[in-house]
Image (cartoon, rainbow, N blue to C red):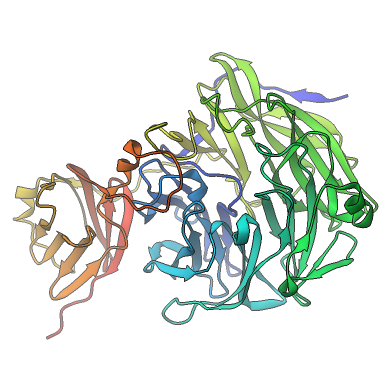
Length: 566
């Protein structure tokens, strides 16, 4: 008998990480916790993108009990498929990957200058490819610590892999092997989720194609062995050598008979996948959804390898599509996530009648060793808006910040004239510690008052100013604090901090991607002209020789200011 654990019927929507942010569920890790061996670094990073095209991340420092929201890239394609993913390098610096949805042949990345600190991101770099790039999933494995293995949806819209060098002294990397297409499906767009054993194997599970276009839609599983660079099934049988070409999959009965250990699920309806993890005995477990032929009924399942077969256990009815636009993306379930630290715990977004009507709430499902549900606990309740796409932060089991999700209204995965509101959600979590006040005093001043400010390198300060740039003459000095100036480059639209004879240029433009709201819906590869700011909030924070600039609350630049030497 299933035991349902319920507290008093109060409103519980979690705790806000950011008021504007969203993610898809195929680019991971979209959040990550890292604690160094000596304990000096103990931080969590949560990445997302907002409808203004800002790719952002929240860094929470457990030592300082302080968070900062970092602007990774401004004026990007406003599409929730473009959320960033994280990787900790061997030197403990944080590498962040991101890309446009489908229509560009490159990845972007930035690397923190300091170990474990994304407030010190270096310049933006590119990895050029010959094929499309979506959903970056990076890995470093202990048997090959000198390389990065990057998986994504690439060649022919199929699962793709490449081996990359570690960054050199200038943060440049090389593609040393690949890219190679892993499998070839009879479907148009297989959807894959990846994880690793941390040592020598990358595990991935994938569908025949997109469930919107295919029914039935099978679910498969394979290993990638980094020593042999071969594809294996769950029993270790070699299926292909990756460099020789993709492994061919299909839904015919002959295929299932020949490769029985590659097929996780072969229903008479539509399958989609949410996550793959590894249980304590070392076997793969999968969070998956079965969707009815008419797409109106979604059901969550837990698939696990018993050592002999794939067993699928029903978890919960997921309703139908969760979002407000009834005529698109009918296979968008509320979502589910496995706790990788205890894989018998699954979090699902399910429709629940509450104080504000029928909303999607996060519930915790506890399973026995056979995969059967033995207890259910409400995480959120009586919410005003939907709580969807939950995600357990990897390596967070020793922290109070574990579970994150999207909260709000959702109309489309991209901003366009069809749905200009796009994905107007916040990111919430189970952590009470956000929004801790800092001790630094914040001085409010006007641009005119700033002219009398005497800046030197000896005294710390925090100043906030509301700037109103001329959108016709969008250039020149926006703020002058003695010898310290904040300028706008007319050619690049990027702000520049100028001190003495040095110029420190931002990676990000001073503008938004709001022009997408009046453009046709779709991924067409275009970069639209950024929307200029008619007003913005600038904060300058100087402490211990480090100047930080914030644009509308987002950390843009971190600059070490050195005394001028003639």
